[in-house]
Length: 283
Image (cartoon, rainbow, N blue to C red):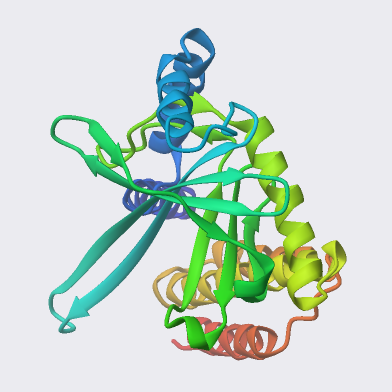
């Protein structure tokens, strides 16, 4: 009975930690509920979408519901000492219009207090400006397209985030609407620009996405191994450490299914497993 209560305690603590971390990093049950609510609002009323498209059309006559993409890129930066660390989030708003052979970029200024926004003048992104294109994230959910620009332009890159469902995760997210067709068209144009600018096929782009995705699985496997060490050091049963290392192996299985071989992460998890075993054997 004591062993069962101990395992139950670990599960409860882990669930709370995952929920808090998920809320902090826009994941988990809280975000799932907000996503569901945002989808319901988007299906019920598309006024915000129509207003955005109309305001873009005033600057670009060729803009329509099928080619206007609202993009929100979030970057985090952590600073401070080991005792107190502060994470700062920066939000980059843009609107993209997928034209025939050109991706138009419009600056987007958002006031979270009044929930109003302003659009800037459109700037063309053509194949002549692009040095490299790469993908990150998941198709159909949140796909990040990075256009690395040529050095002589004086700019690093332009990032377009394709999210078919825009919903209000927090006060920095202005909309609840669907833009599935526009995201699909923007992705088609991305593949066309990547092929014309740097000879990358759609398969090459998918390879860059898989490398990024499997990097996340490698990190997750390492975290599972670390949690396994903690569980082995404070617990009196191998059940929880074994479950955590099984989860790490599951992450490696996903990587292998995507034809990505774990390397450094595999070595790290093996070392973590040895450490966990030795800690468990200590009296």
